[in-house]
Image 1 (cartoon, rainbow, N blue to C red):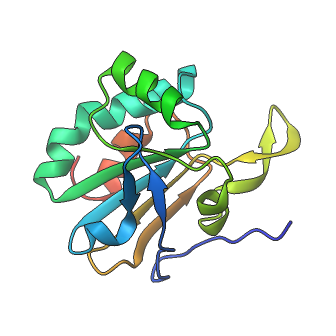
Image 2 (image 1 turned 135 degrees about the horizontal axis):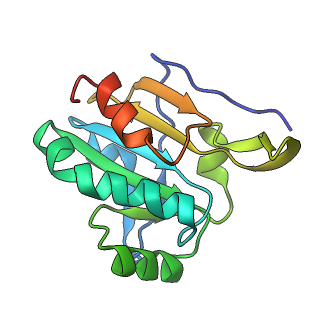
Length: 157
């Protein structure tokens, strides 16, 4: 499996995915804003819940600073609705069950899990500038403390 890795300055791959409510969300709809696009392995799991709640708790500050937050997983919209309702998540959660967008961003591939190499979702976050270019490409991020470290990188901490 060839694995794409994006780097700062690359054009962010365009996509349209269904949100939890079934409505399509396209990256190009956010042109002119900075987007934080994060990929997580599975809704309702402890690490992904922690990360999503950290984004939720920082959403006010991020929005004030002109950022839009989008979460992407391979989960079906029905599961994303439950996740959003259970944890009060107010930013769009997008469904990519065939992993095409994950692969375009290099967020699916070989990773180490408990010391073994496995193929799966690579927890990753991308900051995309107002022109659709990758500002930051962060792979293999930790669920806990990630949002705080991201805010530091963005000069918001």
